[in-house]
Image (cartoon, rainbow, N blue to C red; front, side, top):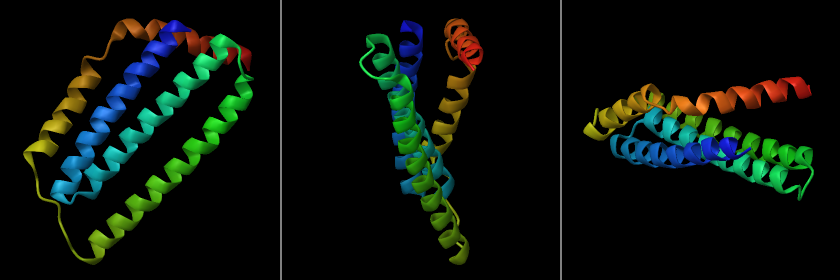
Length: 140
């Protein structure tokens, strides 16, 4: 359980960092793609914080896990629907006005940071994730 909390905490930090950077770069460049990526990253961070909340309740036994998971699923679903609505609206307006985003150093640097993070992510956390996945599959 401790490893799951650690992985989720790292994911929260990354989601906030990548999301904020993408939103700033996207707003600067008026880029629907960067704004959408930023919002998606923030949603990932929020979802990871919900996992931290869930794992903490599971570890402490303070609430029924299925209750916490049900609430989390509904909350994340509404957030994702809002992000989708925003991205579709923003992209539709960009198409209607024939606008194009400008390439920015921040956008290019952010794309490079994302690729680098994917390549150098902590592989030593993978066994804990695989163990959690097996346990979840066996529970079904």
